[in-house]
Each structure stands twice: as structure tokens, then as C-alpha cells.
Length: 439
Image (cartoon, rainbow, N blue to C red):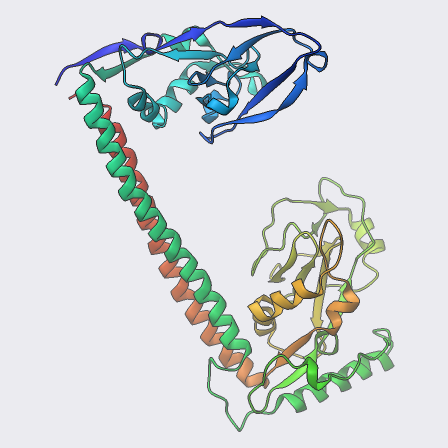
């Protein structure tokens, strides 16, 4: 098999097809997507709206590259739909030398990490002005097979490998979707009382709810919390499904206290007391990035509606809606809009309540009750009225133990799937590199 060293400039030749823009003519303009996602129509403009009057005309089949984003795989081929589009000098055009390479062979070549490396190697400049140097780019050496038959063999081998890899990838995606549905199923079984056995010796949820009610009344009497308008009784047609014996349907606002800083936005500082926003609350955990702070003085003046406690539940009410996590931080924290703190009146299992709020049942309930035109969200008053299942306290503990065990199993499955996917991707890149290596 004969291979030879060539310059990239031997394979692609710059095209100069300049025209002068006329004010009364409408022109097609293109945009080059990053990471090899193709060339798209940017829009139509009359020449009178285009400042740079000297442009290049792109023809069907031309290879085009972005000088600014070449290192981010911003290149591709002009399609028939984009024929006769105009581009500035920041988007140089090239013609593939079909006497040296097959077009399908070259199209596979530009998909390689090797070609991305070429673009990075030929790009230079300060952070915001890194650009591809065309002379450097075209002067890069590479090795290709001389024989077109050999190029065709390599192309066919790559297509076969990609077909297998795409099937692997689809299988991985199916496995990940399966694990996601398995997690949803575990939580749904948990909130329906189907995950662990009931124990008749457990103190019933009815008694637990009465204790919550009495503690709430005492806090109002002691003037530690304000008295609110009672929530309506639960009607029969509101019940979404039948609960096991010993469980009870409750309105969320009757089970936990709402601490809501909606409508308040504190002045931020570079350091001080950590400020948690909706951006920090994820599905099941808190991400400390982005980091924001307020001063101690602002904290003392701002936090007038109540202070969070460790393990309190946080729920986002908008952008995003329905992210739920336990507050596990030991440090003092403040809260901004779009996050509500749910604080128990007596010692409930807050991990169980988190699982209830993350369940498909409750997440669907949030979506059904959301409102707003652009950013969908749920009002605090409506959130308080949503129904949650309340099991006996001892059963809550058993459910959490079982859910945690099953979720750990899901974590293991997910890790194995991701490891297999990474191995397949590494193998694919190895095959691609091997195909374009000198034999």
C-alpha cells in the first residue's frame, strides 16, 4: 500500500470569487455551527443592510471554515440550498482537489480529531482574538494513501465501523433511558406505599398529622409563626390514588412551614454569607456554583421571614420549576427569589419528603398547576394546596432506606453504562486514527 506525505494546501485550494454587493439585491448569508454541526442559512438581507460591500460567493460543494471558530470544529460543506450565498473573508472557501483525494474520503478526514488538531495548531492570538492563519493551515503535513481504491477501502471501513458504533450508541442511550425510568419507578412505588411492607404496630399518619397540627397551633400561640388562612378540606375527587392503610393525604402547606423570599433581592458582595438561588438547587442535590454572597449586615436585615435549618427542603418554583434538594450545608446561608424553604413543624423524615416532591406524581402535579406566559412557575399559594401522601413516621424511615439502596444500585448500573460508552468512543477514535495512519 503506497502512502505519501502532502500539504493540506495540496488537498484544498483557496477560492476567490469576489463580488461587489448591490444595495437593491437580496443575498443569502450563512452561519457555521460549532462542533461539526454543519452550515445553516443565517438569513436573507438586502445589500443596503450589508456593511462590507466586497464579499465571496459560496457555491454548492465548497469547503468553508470559520477563522474564528475553526478550533471548535466550525467548518463544513456548502449545500445546494446554500448555493450562491455570500460570505466575508472571515469564512474562507476552498475547493477539494479531486485529483488527489476522493471527496467521501476527505469528508471523513475532516471529522477526525486529527483535523481539529490541525485547526488548533494553525490558530493563534489573544483569548478573544484567536484566529486561524490560512498560510499555516495550508502548510500542515499529513499522510494519505495514493491509490483511490485504497481510499475507498478506508472509507468503507469507516462507514462500517460508524454503523456499529451508532448501534452501540443507541443501545447506550436506551440503557440510560431505562435507568432513568427505573429511578422514576422506584420513587413512584415509594410514594404509593408499594416499596416496603406496612406494619400495623406503626403509629398511624393520622396521629402524626394531629401532632403536626398541635405543634403548629402552639407556635402560633407563642407568636413564633403567623396564623394563616386554613387550607380547604380535601375532597374525594381530589384524591389521585388509593393509599395503604395507616397513610393519609395532606396538603403540603399543612405538613410543612413555607419560608418564601419571593419579591426580595438582596445586594450581593464578593464575600460574606452564601446566597443560594434557583441556579444552585438541582434534582436531589445542591450545586454551589455559581457562588454568590451577601454581607453579614445585609443578611441580618434581609432574613426577616425565617431562617433555614440543616436538612430543610428546598424547592424551586420557577426557572427551573420543581428542583428539590435537602439543605445539607453547615454554614449560614441566605436565599433569593424562586426558592422556597420547606421546614417541618415536628421531626418528619425530610429525605422521604424530598423523594415525594421528586416523584413523577408530584412533578406532574407541579406542571399541571404551573402558570405564566414565558417563564412557567407555580405560586406559593397554589403549591401549599397540592396533595402529598403521608405515611407513618417509622414507615417513612423504612422507605428511605429501601430507596437509598435501590438508587445506589442504579448508580452502579449508570457508571457501568458510562464506562462502556467511553470505551466504545475511545475504540472508535482509535479506529479512525489507525485508518489514516501510514501503513
